[in-house]
Length: 609
Image (cartoon, rainbow, N blue to C red; front, top):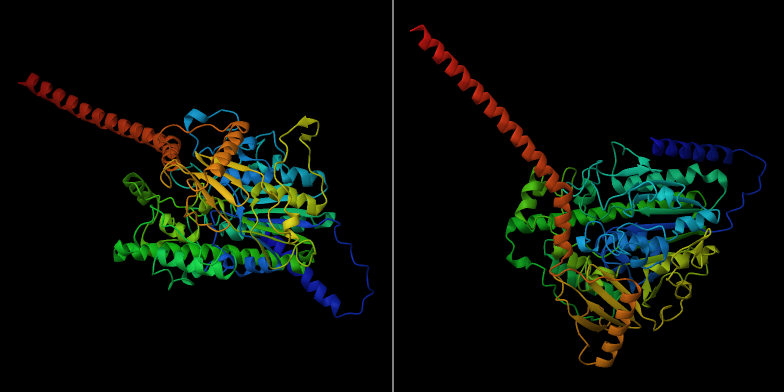
């Protein structure tokens, strides 16, 4: 295993260093540090707004919280409502309809396939942060979830990353090389563009960090600064964690999601993440905890215990990476970016009888096995509402709970980032690329890259906010967004938003996020002029970005189920039908043969009379 070899090498180096330190040797001049900062991107999957201790979580994330103390927390940072569009915007600084992710493969309706901006993969009209930093002399590495294209020309090794061990799918098992059953036929892991095999002792968070440490050490002799993009599977479905991490929370979550949502809101306010006393809504899809029977409550509590354990397991790996960088002397010259790709996942895979029957055949669904190897579980809309507290909505929606996630940027000891600060100015995922290139002293591009026209970067550098500047770098400029029919227009402190079923009714609403981040008071009637101006701003954005209207009756949940059936359900039914047909033919042939022999015997007996 490369990881084990790497660990052995590091242990040997440390041991030799200790021995040399005990002996009088001639001092050697220190090797100069790279002139540019290293960059570490820590991308969590499906973490809600308050799923970090420094944003209000009750479970342990001490290492991420330490980065928060060393840097700046953004309490008004927005991404897309689903993973791939966010990831493409993070990679390119370009809005999702321009970078090809107007929708994802799993959620796009057939009517939109092939239309401009609806490639369902990151297109070649954009330049990635890997390509920019690679051209500037950086070592560039990526591990973990990619989900931006699976063909050879679209995998990370072809998009600016020197080394990459990546998963092309939306998610996969965390303990073995196994897909999400029913959604994919295999777990599409590759290394440097070639099919790869996971180790037998694989656990996702541990593996993606160890592989990154290996890459960093293998390239250390070059003396170049590095970009390390670590893309965790935690806490995407299936929710899974080591037994010890689940056990840590065995006494928690028995009071249910409503109590947790309220407790998180209080902590977030006490931390200064949201205004004190911010109002909250109860999502219509949130079940009543009091109406669950004892077995249902036990299973629900166990799922959240596993979710908390999965987050803590990931945080521990972040701490291991940071400790390694400190020992290696890299820590002070490294910019850390921590964020989630969207809000908490509300999907309940067991909502339909068909899914329950199918998953029951594929996994051990016993309550005692939830979160363990061989399990399949998800927190559902109840716990997702708590993970998003005190915001409304969750993943897939354009409500704040779907779009607003934690962001931490730290450059330890560096004057450009105010340690321990919190900013409530509007920030967007497209802002990350220009922020990092400015801090690194690397030129971006002006819409032209290596002799060809490309989409210009639309994000704005957050450096003024990192230095403690008041307000947002976006000022009063309109900032539009759309995915799967759920849409928003941000302008200053205000947000115009529309959500389709099941989290909305398709009507536009207006909120002042400064005082009402929970989106509880619709101001459309009270401020009609602002409402009309922002609606006009949205229509301008939609036209400029080629946004298409959704087919009647569309919902992302139904489309995912349809995609799963088309990709896996239908082929399995066909194979099952062929197997049944072959079996019927075989049995029919046997019966026919038996009858023929009986008739033959009867005829022979008659002829003997």
